[in-house]
Image 1 (cartoon, rainbow, N blue to C red):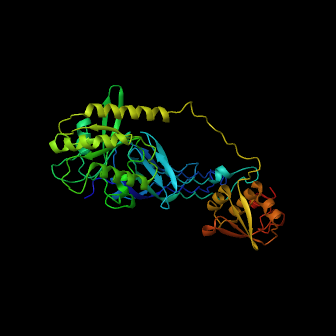
Image 2: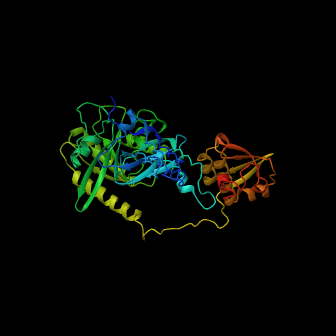
Image 3: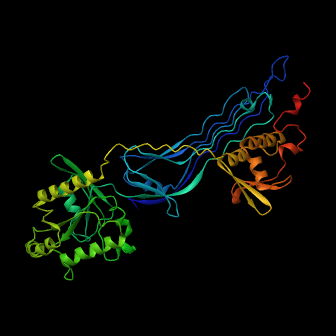
Length: 449
């Protein structure tokens, strides 16, 4: 049974908004006392929040569908519907949110960081909220807006200052256990760590985190072995420490070849060339290991690398290594620190931005835009008065003028919305309305009073 999961596909669905209510208040001696239909409640949101107590995406591996509550419909006597229940999903620090196609959406770093993964639909207005001097007693209400739903890919990338990289069984787990309070699984036989481990290390006043992540093998950058399951956890680290086994029982391996192989995989993965490197020659508590470490150290230093001979078992040489890590981490933090407070850039809406686009497609005309599409979804097309109200709203927004400019005429086919979910109309301009109700959106029952 899996105990650590660092990549899942999650389907989230926000709640739908509740429908508005069309109701007329009735009192003694006054059977039609005016509209009193309440508004529908908003749909619940699905929100991701970074929680320090969560270290894996295992919860979503077993339950990949999360649905928020729907808003309740409005009622008469001005009673509004209740809002739908929100869902808050706790995720680990360092969770990256993308689409199934790989499009970046959000990077959740820092405890308390939130992201609304799916937004609940707005509640529909009741006829009391729609009443005006022109429509004193609307005989319709607006539908609630559907909530958004989509598939998201959650990928955990460990947030650490230092990454320990190396072959399986090089001693990375033992090293992190010796430097910190972390207690990863360690055995006296060759095996590789299957999950990333994080440890907090102190060096004077500098406190930093070290990640012990699964070991690499040749071809890891192409997905061989644990492959990318390891490499994604190195991306955020500012310092890389090569942990090299100087007492390996495999006769076809040597420290220089191991280092070259790991560097080749890091290069193939990409994006890690600028990270400072430190080499830790581990297992010098073994006589043959100490001898080999002393032999290869000059060659490694000739490459410009800082080299430390250490033993995770006896703790020999760990203190200089820890302080060297701290120095590199401190330098990286200074480089990444902002020189000044971030500036807030306000981008006002363009003066010529109408909020919609009218495009001619042969003999038809397509209208797209957030507001027109939302209004269409909230309209009850079985109610002529509601349809007239929609037409009036579109006219006030400027849709009719834009259609005339594009060459639309009486009876032209107009589509509102994207291709996969458009509503089709035979256009009737306001000057030639044939709905039979007089001015569109008005209440014919009030005429002549």
